[in-house]
Image 1 (cartoon, rainbow over the protein chains, first blue to last red):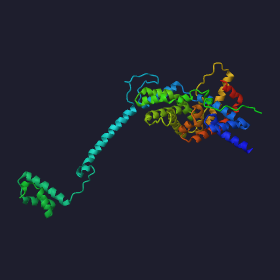
Image 2 (image 1 turned 60 degrees about the horizontal axis):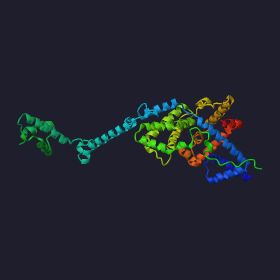
Image 3 (image 1 turned 180 degrees about the vertical axis):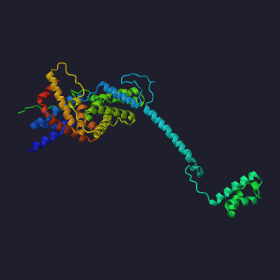
Image 4 (image 1 turned 45 degrees about the vertical axis):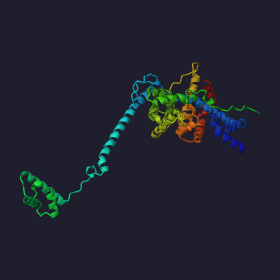
Length: 202
Length: 220
């Protein structure tokens, strides 16, 4: 009884594969033997075989497309792929009628723009790589030293003054004092001296 | 007492005697390989030829899974576009082009029926095309045949998506268990068990069809 139960259980688990020819030779022989000696296994085999035949007969008819459906789908594929128009599955064409598909054209344009972008980045980063931080786009100017700023301001004034007349160093000092409202420190004066046009120095 | 003869071992040909468009010869690799090579070389007529070769089967597969005409068209279009754009990634040593294309389509079908609720499918919608009747078919026989096919389709719609995929790939397209496993992205044993479970469920659903109806159906 238990043996018959296990035999039937084995058949039920493997009959679909047996009918579909998917078992190993050893397993197929075993199933064939069980079908031959056991009535329950044989009945199960008949049911499974008829089901398989019915499915094989009916399923291929489900969802058969019409030609207009297939043509519509092909038109949509052509549009998305950029395949040249009016190529039907049976239309002959010559080797000269093979424009580049649109998706390939877009891909090439993106590649070109990408290369240009990389080149521009390298050009902008080149001074930085060479150590000249003054030309780097990332250079952040620091606020100037107030004393130096005053000195340059005075120097500008002196140069303007010098361009108008010969000018003397005394007048220069007086002008600087007026601007700064405090006497210049020696180091600042040196900076001003160096910034002052030669014609005005004494 | 011997009341029966030992049944002959089933072969693949047994299950494909009445197939339409699902014979194992569909998997011939050489003509497809030549077409793929032409596609990669830029021959656009090769794309059209590939489409013509595989579109019908792919549409049948997609329709059987998503059970909706418009969705099936969308999936077929997306599958072909993806396959054509990624032809360089196809490896003929791993699977046939048809299996690869079916894998893409099944993946997209799964996205489709995850997005949507199961459709309320009428039998008339499910049964898409007029099936050409045999020339000498009697009206009663045509009705019987139609009833049997409607029953199969309704039973198919009642299966879970995974079981439906397995049984459609096996009986609708003649794929082996190994190919089913590749398409469904599962182990081969899992594919076998899904076919078996689909068998069990369909047998219970199709039992009321009756032996006489099956006899009549198989006589066409």
